[in-house]
Length: 273
Ligand code: ATR
Image (cartoon, rainbow, N blue to C red):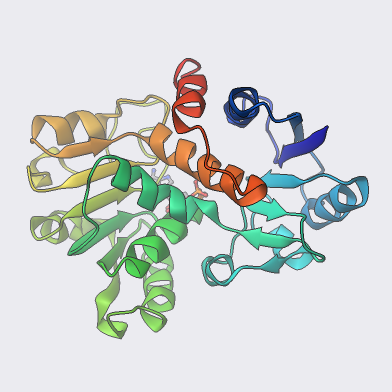
């Protein structure tokens, strides 16, 4: 039996175990997916211990996504993002990936959203970093807006340094710039926690329009205030469960080399949300 798992703190309410075990059931893979909750400074030690024990793969979440970098060989995108959410123990040292980035791209692709033109990423934490690099690598011009402006400008500078369209294709802003930025935008990602368990949006409703595709990384509730406002404006909406799903799909495919049973994983997730 193969063992996979999630390292985080807290992890008790994680939806990753049922999502991945649905995939094992669907494909007849003899594996289990379990959760681990090490002390807050023990992320790298947890990865090293898992390697010793023969764990096949780990997902990594808050607060360990940066810490585990020192215990893995990061793939280029994970190194640029500066965070690892998936560890593959097939190599020694294990390889660290960031499948949150692919999660953003695949969530949009699943909704037939073309990733070209201009993106606005609100938030510059872990999810914002993954979204900004992912959309830039698709060739989009990326505007990052954040409450703490310095984090937005720092992230934008990092994205610009490796942008396929050149260094002018990414910029950082404060939140007050969002309405003007959205006027010419094709894609909006909310990568802040605003809207989580609250009826509040990080974006004024009247700045949304029908030519936008809006992904909210928040998945509790699924229909956030932002997504309700976006739907009312005629925008394409992509809820946060799609991002959660596709980061898991991408991890599963990395670990097993098999196409993930996306529908089974999606069903397992959505029945629990
Ligand atoms: P994650 O890994 O989920 O991205 P994070 O790294 O803690 O979580 O980042 C949280 C993001 O939500 C940040 O962009 C944060 O803004 P700051 O960098 O200014 O802290 C943003 N955020 C959290 N609460 C917010 C609020 N009330 N208004 C606006 N932005 C908020």
